[in-house]
Length: 365
Ligand SMILES: NC(=O)c1ccc[n+]([C@@H]2O[C@H](COP(=O)([O-])OP(=O)(O)OC[C@H]3O[C@@H](n4cnc5c(N)ncnc54)[C@H](O)[C@@H]3O)[C@@H](O)[C@H]2O)c1
Image 1 (cartoon, rainbow, N blue to C red):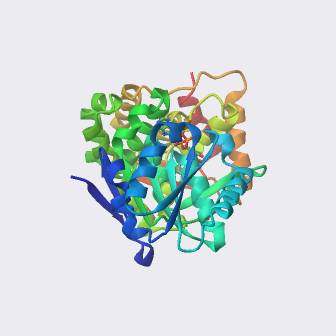
Image 2 (spheres, rainbow, N blue to C red):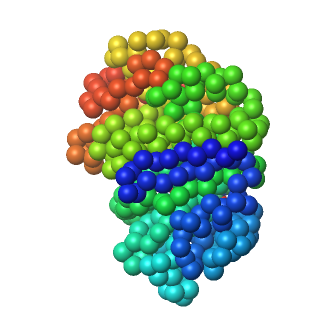
């Protein structure tokens, strides 16, 4: 039985359908939301090779005229130049206001295709069929879309909610192992910020999750989507509480920047960042339950994610400086999300730099 999680956004509310094997039903599930007559499926070349034809077939058999547009896999494709090529594809296929764009793939396809849909003819319908674990538990829900630019990552974009999301959890079987485990960092994060029972469930089912057991993956994806959907409904434009989803990310982003974005996958940097945030919370006297650090470390290790970065000389100082720079860029508000106890976090806007440095130091070896 498919799980259905609703993102409650009034007239923009939408369902997320989750179950192993759901790709075959994508046409039947999405057709009522996509009147058509046409749909443009957007996927990177790798995802298109594995799963593109099955999605095209499912949508075609539901009565849509379907076109497939692809781009080279990877973050480097998340640019205005690729968006421009996709708008060209929209023009060639005469995609108009009644038609839709369907993103098939990881966060890059979702962000890019969503942005293309938000702008084409000032906004046409958009649906998501995520294929990476990160996209299933995070990027396909919430409506943040966009591209990278010379000014920085994810600075150009639009909020564009999909009309529906279809998640076939068996699709993660074809993912690269490291990419898959990187997605588990976000699953772990949801437990720490919001749901102690979910964290405990992950502790009990870590081996099944690492082995990509379809039922375990479906359960983890459904609970992650429920938690994300709650945040999105409470704060659709990320002006307040939704910032809690960035637990581990301020430290993690500094680490990604310091290591030139090539060394760590995003989830790996977030795993190290969560360790740093917990240590920082302890130094600041915010952490009320010290067992959180050991439990978080243990689950990070069981998910085969890094908890420490082997530092080179001068890196600690540079990491702190990256946060200072961040602060300038974001108008003086570097936001640290710090754990209090399992399932509860607080926002700290300006912890003392020595405490931030101590947090960073706890994630270095
Ligand atoms: N919009 C949001 O709210 C949000 C949230 C988090 C991250 N993001 C964005 O998401 C992106 C990262 O997402 P990602 O990690 O999914 O990256 P991605 O889309 O590049 O996918 C990672 C790699 O996995 C491959 N892949 C994906 N699914 C596969 C499958 N089932 N089988 C085989 N290969 C598969 C892709 O081809 C790619 O090579 C970043 O650009 C980030 O900024 C957006």
